[in-house]
Amino acid sequence: MPHAPQIKIPATYMRGGTSKGVLFKVDDLPEAARQPGAARDALLLRVIGSPDPYGKHTDGMGGATSSTSKVVLLSKSSRPDHDVDYLFGQVSIDKPMIDWSGNCGNITSAVGSFAISNGLVDTSRVPQNGICTVRIWQANIGKTIIAHVPVSDGAVQETGDFELDGVTFPSAEVVLEFIDPADEDDGEGGGAMFPTGNLVDELDVPGIGTFKVTMITAGIPTVFFNAADIGYTGTELQDDINGDTAALARFETLRAHAALRMGLIKDLSEAVQRQHTPKIAFVAPPASYKASSGKPVEATNIDLLVRALSMGKLHHAMMGTCAVAIGTAAAIPGTLVNLAAGGGAREAVRFGHPSGTLRVGAEASLENGQWTVKRAIMSRSARVLMEGWVRVPGQ
Image 1 (cartoon, rainbow, N blue to C red):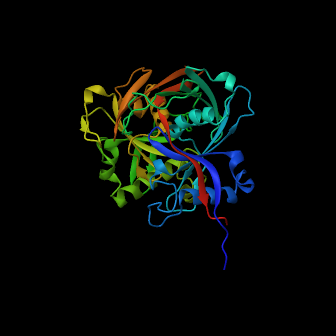
Image 2 (cartoon, rainbow, N blue to C red):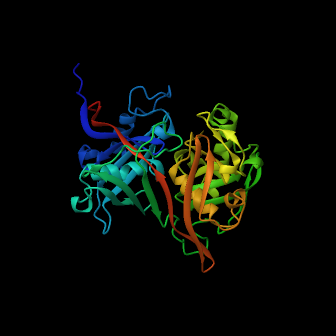
Image 3 (cartoon, helix red, strand yellow):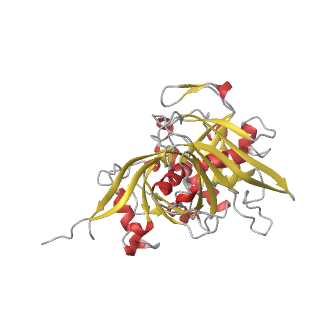
């Protein structure tokens, strides 16, 4: 019997920071997929090649890791003082699910470049040479992000000598400003940046134990543990954790209980459908170790160690949004992140992650008894890997 031919959809495959994803203009999608819902998710799952019980993404554009299984939807913004609306989807590898609950800070670095190159930024705002300031509305979390994108001869400059640990080759630097990255105050005294109103809480997890945690919603909802409290040093690489199924199950249990305590879910059973948020991370004071590339990271060159999990696995570097949470928490005296960095007031930290180091800054202040953060800043890079069309079966 005859079968429907494949359809082709304009798309761009890009690296953003230490992530990769498939970027689309919303208007280029089939009409049924331009709105949230089952049709859109089914299409994008098929683009990535999920769900894949083999865990390889052989029949799709995904890379079979949380860092490389991402989709981005972009459109010209109708909001005042913004250029582009940006919606991010984290695609599950082995489940028919796309988590739209949060942003990806790494892939954000590709958004400004794409927007300039695809006519989503007015040409009057693009210099012939210099830095183009792209005003991004992050639709998942309702926040503004400013991308400072280098432009040469009227086009996005992608090549350069900026090195980012976790990315093999140098590229052009893209500076990202996350404006007012914390959640808004809930009006009930619970605090927005700190969902419980506390810088440090005790999280009781039946069958595992009670742990000191810092739970914060800046950049992305994140729960921080002390590495030593959960049996780690903070110098772990991916192979130290990702091959241990019991450890991963334990991390997921900890994450689920934190999600409940943070008010992100109403029942523990809902955590399985909310894999992207919250992130779970653990911190430790500085220590020397060898990064995954073999490069030595010296304790004297960092302020603290951080390891974080994404979609159930230890991340190979650091998620950009989690870096915002790290920078923000580090700037606030008394959080576990701040204490691991030595305590006291600080406007920036350099932390060690599995692939090397990253510096992130944040402007935090105490106003009327509540901590607020005006902005968090970090540098990333982005590059187009391929552009043209993706093809998916017609059904």
